[in-house]
Length: 243
Image (cartoon, rainbow, N blue to C red; front, top):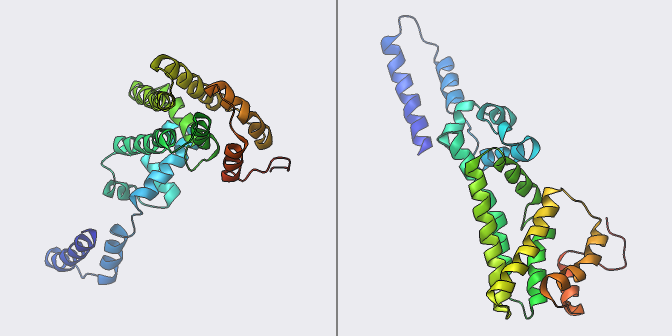
């Protein structure tokens, strides 16, 4: 559709200007101006990715159209081909966070597992795989929530959805609703604490702690074969130095 608009705009410019101009027209300049005005505008995903990076680096106050345009080397007006305004861009950021972080916890909690310990290891994939759960994005959105009641409501809604998914996982393996809720909250709130504190652990240290975390959260120790599969998924080999 935008190609046709470009062609029509150029054609109208070509026909109309000679009719109203009072001096000779330089058609090369007309063409250059038209192409500059209707040139490459980037993409919706490109603008969203730039907004995401700005949010992670400097917070929501840095997610503004003009700085993003400069970062992308695009005109400010090109933004409006993809988003109505800044608020729509911010809403797209929230949707991206919701789909990735909340969606992944829900999906991992519902993944096939033979035991509760294995089910919890599936959830732990989120904490170790940034393609499933983005810790930096989570921290940035929670920081944003400190200055926006609307975003705070989104965060609280996400928290409830995530804990409800974890509680359903515990119920699936025989826990009653009350103990399932308590265990789900313990599991989830500890991880959010890690994120909020921006805690960093050596990979080997964290992997060594995982069996005990699983035992505390679920009440059962993971079997060695379950741990072996989990370690393999994350490229960890016990007893070797990890970078």
